[in-house]
Image (tube, rainbow, N blue to C red; front, side, top):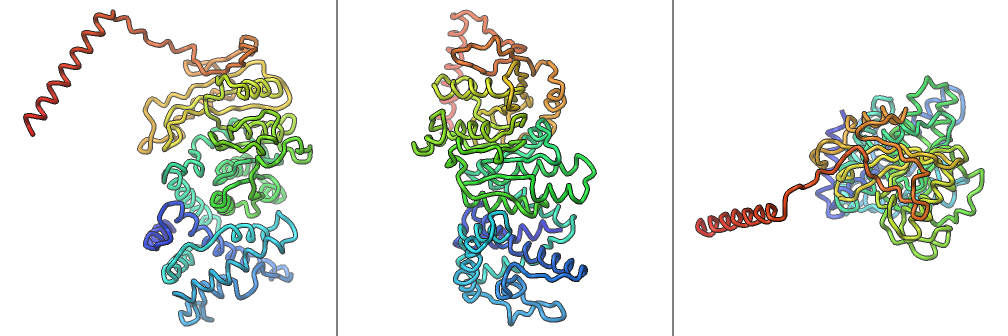
Length: 484
């Protein structure tokens, strides 16, 4: 129903000089989508207030409401093109009036957890990149075709938005920070199994895939009462995101999935000294794929007991501190963490094993994350008791993964089934902590069920094969030269 509209929006944005990548398309369509969603949301609240004989106060002043500047309609409901701004007039209004007005909400909002504050935060960090006011008018017209009223409409829009995020993940070398494969997120959520009433946190929100999937999992886990649904929508999911575009997309993604008041703050999680985290700040569940490989500055490293420039190691320290006793975590990290010999890696592995029960490690194949050759693992742990044994699972999809054959739900079915009981198989085994080297705490993934094939050929046989291959190569080159 709405798929063609989304395609039309991207086609229009492609023609504007201010937008050149999938990241630009997502950013510019997101702020317009947000304002259309806000208009539908406010209309729904106004209708409800009238039915209950209550007063309704709109969030935005009349001049800045969608029906005043974006799409003006007459009494019969038809678009009044004479009153709808376009071209240079529309661009001037958006740049000089609309954005300054919306960004002012960040200072005037009473609390951080209000819709007003999120509006101010989004539009303080954004700018309209569309250079042509007529292009902007075309995008606004397309977005007005979208409706955010019924559950079916919201479901379709959320699926389309997920596809847009996925395209961003494939867009370039930085795309992966916006997209973690959905089958992997689902699997992590199923193993951690967050319950209604628990708080779920992601300190590196990105596009909010983990929080969205946790919401889906929890809302479908049982028949919810009205109060339980309200708790899920307003007091269950928390997070922080450093980058502006990811913050905006994360909020929009959560809203489209039914979380109308996303508790995401726009800040660098690592700027918080973990010694300042108190009991009231702690959470039941953490689900995350934090950025890795970054080189954090010295002042950031001072916020952590284990000093390191590796971003992911700082996040892991933060997550351990942020969990309640008995809290559970599923986190993606580079597989080199398991066996690196630097002091920070060893100290962090020691802390993890002594303060938490690292009950499972999922080893992922190369190509799980599109556009990167980095190998990763997922650590599953519970805070409050030391590790006695680790159940390891080495995922073997039976193929090389990439853009044309990405990770899918079926690839992880066997892992999820075995993870519940931690059964042993050709792909799974148990590591007892008592057998781990206490100097290095090396947790390197080595499947004892798979024996590497040994080449029994003699040196003479190997040299003979090399010579034969050289002859074949020479023959091919000669044929090419003769052909040319």
